[in-house]
Every structure is written in C-alpha cells, then in structure tokens.
Image 1 (cartoon, rainbow, N blue to C red):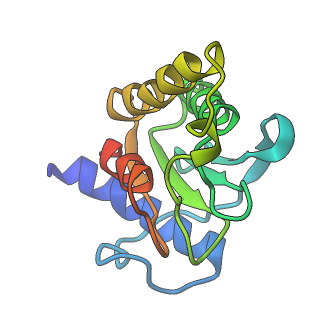
Image 2: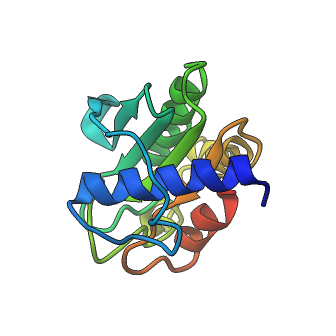
Length: 163
C-alpha cells in the first residue's frame, strides 16, 4: 500500500472510531487525522445513513435495516444509490461501509427474496446485488468495510468488495 493510501485508510479508521466513540478501531488507528464533524443524511426508508466530512474527505455509509442488515432489493438499491451520491462529491476520497448493529455487519441475502420468488423481482434483486459489488470494487474511492460482529455469506461479499 502506498503512503497516500495508508494515510487515507488511517484517517478512515480514526474517523470511524470517533463516530462510534471508541479509541482503537484498527491497527492503523495511530495515524493522525483532522476532526471529524459529520453531517448526516439518509436514503428513503432510512436503510442507509450517510455521514460526510468534506474537510477530511471521508464518507461513512451505515446500514440500518433491522434486525441484521439483510440484503433485500430495496437495501441493495439504497446502498448503490448512497455510493453513487458519495462518489459524485469531488471532495470525498474515501468511503466506510458500516453497520448500525454492533453484533452484525450484514447477515447476507434476505432469504425472503429467494423463497417463492416473484418472477419480475428476482432478476432485479440479483442485478442489484451485482451492482453493489461493481460500485464498491470499481469505486474511485478508497473503500473500507468497518466490520463489527458477524458477516456471513453476502455480508462477507460486501466486505470483500471493499478495497
């Protein structure tokens, strides 16, 4: 990892720790970073909350779908829309994907999407899941998954799509 990327990741980790009120988050948390005073907005239905600190160049997307941030069509679309909104801001250099639930990052796919699926909805669901991977992996931003708790199956998929 080049020094500039290390600094960005360090800033992300430090800022994430401050947002959660914790002192240590990751091993790079010792790097200094400017104060993180975020402004928040949310997507429709509050599935993903967005916190942005333009001075530090950091955005944090917090998944808030109870009980376990399972990935439904609506959740997938909310994540994709939030990523695109953050990427449109030229002052943002990095993105942290996090969970509002400290015990679960994401439980993975919403199985209700797969049980007796609607023939019109199912292709949209799979396309939206692929789009999350494309948006995270192909992002111009340095992306970090701030995993606290479990991340099975597609929860791990989300984390692996981050840089």
